[in-house]
Length: 179
Image 1 (tube, rainbow, N blue to C red):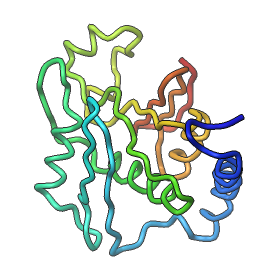
Image 2: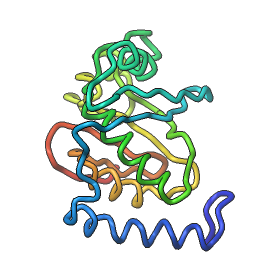
Image 3: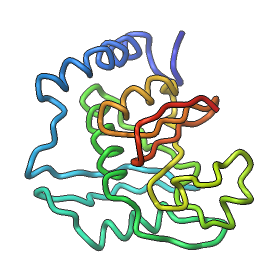
Image 4: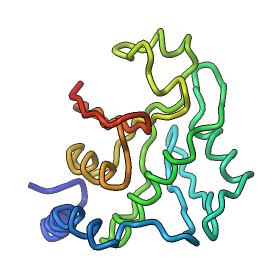
């Protein structure tokens, strides 16, 4: 089995690293640093963005707002202040992947949704966390959905929805489902 443009050795390294995640969390390796700097590398509509939204443990307001705009409801062209914890979870997961040589942008398939957009989205929950700016649907080129689910759960994602072509992550309450 090979991942997109990824060698078997790299796949095994990722798998082993994911296996060790719970262990390293217990040993403090995934605990956020008080003075941490976080960068989010995302792709939306085939446009890549690499934004450092947190420096020395503090949110950088204009960069945070820039990220919120990237995570906007594209159908309605509406942005809201997203839950900063969501950005932190995604960035910490990316830092982990970067440690093991994976430097792809995460692809946003859906983020904030207005109530109207949510009502017109097939399969969307009526009280979706997307309408509160607490959820995102993503995919990562070459990485299996179950791997991503485990990775982002380790870094604090509460809601994990596992779908055939994407992963839902939110910051509401702990639960897991398959769509």
